[in-house]
Image (cartoon, rainbow, N blue to C red; front, top):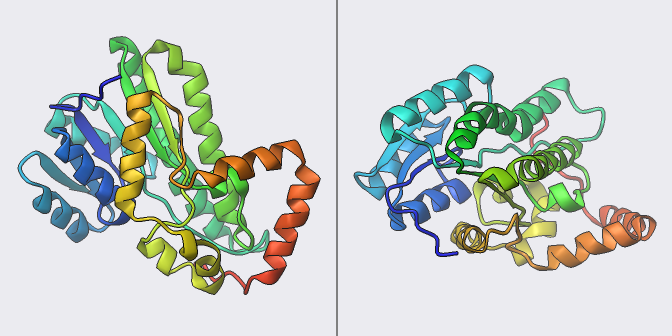
Length: 265
């Protein structure tokens, strides 16, 4: 498949920096018109202005029901049709099952329900016209888990499961779905992940532009799973083939790491 994005309408959430900003840059370079969304209005505006006339900053919450509805409405005013929606915004909360309820609530809303709420508004129109693309930025943690960060691991698993569900349900009806599952990426989320997170992810971390490149390759190939770190596929297969051995290895790894200090609010 030759990927033709010229004139297409694209929304990228969490696009004020990091992977989202890299997505926006790549889509604009391919000729798309892009809405840059971020909670940080200044960051969204800066990215949009740096990318030129076909880019529009729309600040706001891309996770709550009202926030997603406002984003989709505003994006349609700028773009007309929304052809590609990149549910990229995410939060990383560490802690155990005993972490504060707020950490679980924000993780579910941003990492999972933001995707569900966007799909609820977009899928009917995509089905009617027979085309649409949903990009879920998940994480390798959605395939492999991560020590010391229960809210992050659990909600990233759920985000991956929802992307799978979308693909199995609508993939034969013109809707393309891509789940992007990197390990470490050189973004603010990595730098703020604490000693354990950096020890685990920084040595093999990739740049945000690498993630965007791999997404575009997957879109061209109509491939669901996007793995900027190919070794994740091997680890995922080992997890499925021998769960007890895999869990024993994860316990050893967790024991060797310092305490995770991701945000726990």
